Amino acid sequence: MIDLHLLRTQPDTVKAAIARRGESTTALDETISCDRQHRQILGKINEMRSEINRISASVGSLHRDGRHNETAELKARSRELGNRLTEITAEADELAAQISRTLLKIPNLPADDCPSGASADDNVVTKVVGYDTDSYTECQRMPHWEIGEALGILDMNRAARMSGSMFAMYRGEGARLARALIEYGLDRNRDLYEEIRPPTLVRTEVMTSTGHLPKFVDDAYHIERDNLWPIPTAEVPLTSLLSGEIVDEADLPVRLMAHTSCFRREAGSAGSKTRGLLRVHEFDKVELYGFCTPAQAADIHAEILGRAEQAIADLGLAYRILDLCDADLGEASARTFDIEAYAPGADQWLEVSSVSWCRAYQARRANIRYRPRSTRPTEGKRTQMVHTLNGSGLAVPRVWAALVETHHQPDGRIAVPEALQPYMGGATAIG
RNA sequence: GGAGACGUGGCCGAGUCAGGUUGAAGGCGCUUCCCUGCUAAGGAAGUAACGGUGGAAGCCGUUCGUGGGUUCAAAUCCCACCGUCUCCGCCA
Image 1 (cartoon, chains in turn orange, purple):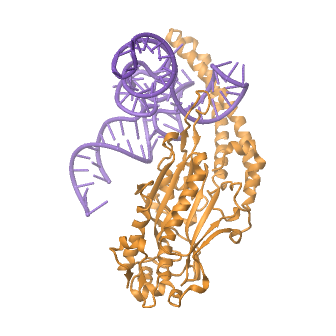
Image 2 (cartoon, helix red, strand yellow; image 1 turned 120 degrees about the vertical axis):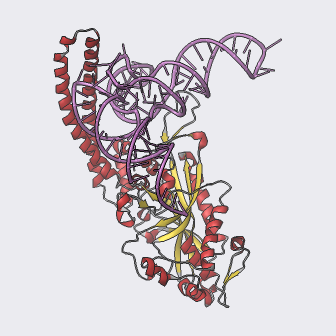
Image 3 (tube, protein in one colour; image 1 turned 90 degrees about the horizontal axis):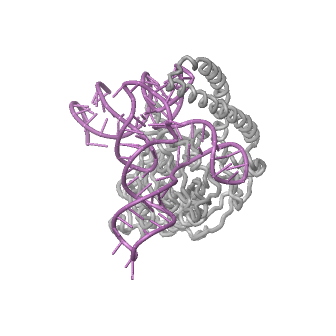
């Protein structure tokens, strides 16, 4: 959620920022005028409440003094005020509801240094590592769904029989490889990040706090009977870990990591870009997460990106880093770097991590604040919203795919990268 | 799933079954100051969040799990929801 106060005081700045995303700003104008009316009414309500409180106190003291018969007139006056208050409060509530309805659908403001563009084509490639299109052998050009089937380590057909298309089933060493990747993803961040195993089914408010609801209902699964949502990413429950809390600045940054299943409906996406493991409804992922002060945010952002990048690099995969332009930014993000691994068999760059700085956008929705360390009693004692950052530390299916294709050997086996061998019981190859 | 109990400030804990200076006694913790030749002990004051207004001190409003209702007035009465605990049942 964007800062209503900022919208109020610097409407043009906010409108310009939203316009960068290619979104209409008419909702912002409506919100500004609703807010003006709302505050006006709030002032009136405030005065009336004050009046009623005063009258009630007098009635109370008259009763205490035994002057019961002198209260009738005061009560009548207060009752009349109360009736008017009910009407005017309904008006205010309607305005408040309208404001929050629109506010919940307004995306975050892009960071000033976020590149400008019109579409995903304008994302800026900031780094390419290990990619040489002519260097790939014939066996590396075999897509993972073929390798997987040949080796019996991936069974998309039976998965589809159970759950439909775009569901995966790993088998044997393939399943072990998936599990090894998770362990690998967690262990390498154990030094700084607390491991969390959150629930995978969450309430509506929890989905709302990250920005996944209400705007993107169609992308999420929903268990209606219990009104719970299977999480699309661990970012969702991790954000709510501190919801409603006020943390000491001394305790920031808070670094968390979690391995969970992730569920995405991926409505309307089928075709060549979704073959095999390229896009699935359910997958495992290790997420890295940070809560911090605004001053710490840049460092944490770089840290998460660096860790996600190194995890891919250490698997011997070719990859590139993209600085997402404003038009391609996720709803809640102010700045995002994507890591794409190259899958030579599918001949595609696969997004394997998206590292986002959400500023206070999610903190405002989840109401997560911190109390600044006060040097002088007069200054800086007010609570402020924390900043939140997230990024995939390791997303299994696409890394699995890129790895299997990249390390496919002429003899049909798959070489296990050295960094992963300890997690595969020392095995150097699969198949 | 059935039955019952409970939910108060950073924490503990009064107040709820007699609705009225109770934003909330008391304690702990924390902060500042004083005293004591340092660590112990003692004394004084302060110590929620959010919104509004003001240069500031302050003033006004809201919040006693959440949301509604009753009332001139609700932490206190009524309803719904959320959560916690106990017993029974079931279960990995």
